[in-house]
Length: 293
Image (cartoon, rainbow, N blue to C red; front, side, top):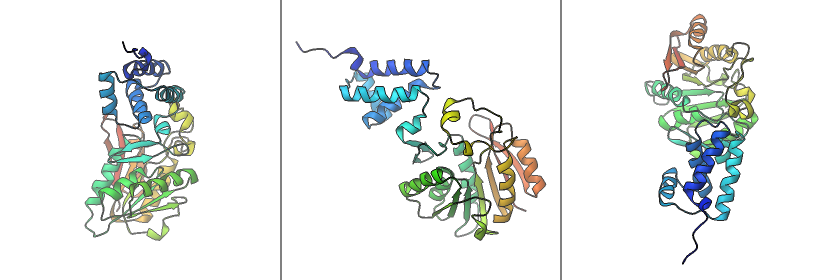
């Protein structure tokens, strides 16, 4: 009679234990994270993990130890994306890690507004810029989904710029130019030529403490905080956008759900027209757009 495997070596058992550990650690979605981390360890898909769970697949000792190690890291609230080394964004899988802001699902709607505005431009090669590109998420979305465009992205952080460069090479966006510098003056050669100005800038007030440990402990602070009310960078971007954009250009800004009215006021006072705030898929105010006079 063949020897039965140890109960804790089966996929259902290790996933159940992992979910319990992550739940106790306060992880927001322990079941999803456990499945994604096991898929990462086994170099397979989440769908395959579901199949292995149904069939009671048995892990080797090495696989079980590797899974236990990543669960320990996640229970310490290290971001899931830092452990796997990647984050999904629209149609792409972006490379991420320490030193760069991990792109969030809500930013995908910001990218959509920028993409829609770029497609609406009646020009053979419309120019778009991404101010403070971070991982390159919005810039790469525009470049890949509007292939006849020219996209220029700028990032002031050396560490984040390095991640963006990896992603440009990884995705293979030949119509995207990446620059390292301040968005205040790094794009001055484009003055008056830009059709879409997009940005997911820092917008957390200086004295606000992010609820999530993953954000508080691991996201770069320069990607989070922007003055007492969180709007210092947006005030600068409004002026930069007016200088870079041509008549009729669109500015697309991500922000916190409580900041829409203040941003519309900033843009309108600066001279932007038709400032409007839009909701993300969770019905929270997330993006404000306006038109260059």
